[in-house]
Image 1 (cartoon, rainbow, N blue to C red):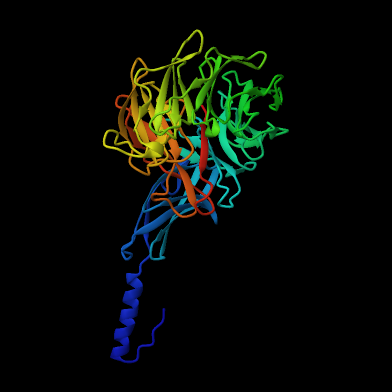
Image 2 (cartoon, rainbow, N blue to C red):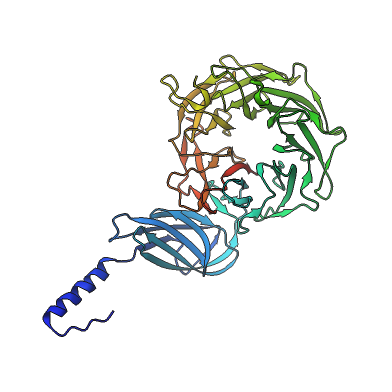
Length: 493
């Protein structure tokens, strides 16, 4: 900046100009991990902070560039703690911060990545919002061993078909299956166990010849179940058999009829029983259908007493939309319309269902209401998970965008304990990792950057059931606008 100052008054104004330029200072970025010039093993933990001494509105975001114009991660606010996956090599990374006044600050960090630690598993989300105009995609994450943090795989978003609504993996985490409602098929992918990258199975997608609302994999990995759900005659369960090359083939006798609107699956640990949640359209009463599974013939046989009605409470209609089998002893159903969780004891020798005393556990208000008796109001549970100890159940609530926490007694009864703060988790699903120590769910709008979506992660206290946000959460990823919400999530070993 130049100033021509010929008189004392001119010098005074030049001083003002220089002072104003100094006042509008760029943010100061401090990176405490990794240390510039160091050798590290991936995934690389970046810990950084930024402050603005001149912008009253503070820092908008911090971003990591792994190479020029290559965005590795972007977090909201002035603190960043995240992991990024980098292949072995030398990287001249840049950590850049923006304040809310338009100023930019940078820190330069050169690192040598010597190798990659084997992940403790992988997490995959399917993302789509037909109203947003965004293309549907799958986002993959690796799980950092020992602390449950997530790091986006280096593959980036993987294109899905038309309307991916559900996802499941095989028990070993070698294959991923995505249910598509519009195209009416199951898309199969191979999972590279080194890095979580996905590659389509030859011949995918595999036609189910009807809208698919849910997908599940038999514990053997050889059968894949698809819920055919158009709320009309012809709905049912399609059974695919795994072929030697990874392809899927409809089994003889498939599909097996159900009531209208099958929405979700659950299985006992050895896969002898399959449970199907039926929304049953406008009939007003939902059901759980129970089948005996013959893995050798890929056939399903209805169990005595099936279908089992889901009780109608004060709202006048039941609609089970998620199931969870607890060690083959108890089955829980999330009823999003009534705002309740239903519990059933499972007869070990027959697979049949009997309501657990005290079931359902409700907030007594329709579609999420609220009340003084049950302050976890606005429940509308959409997805269920249980911790690794089997002592606590978690229900993702769609209305208040939180997670309700219940203790599980020895007889299967639930007792409400607490719930996470409003807008702490939402959308799609709630899932634990293979150890049952960490819980993941979709993130909410609160504090989210425009153009980004993400996943939140919690550590589980196995004594109290409490959920504590991981210091590395949330795990943001780019999207166009606020579309492409997390529809479902699968977590592999």
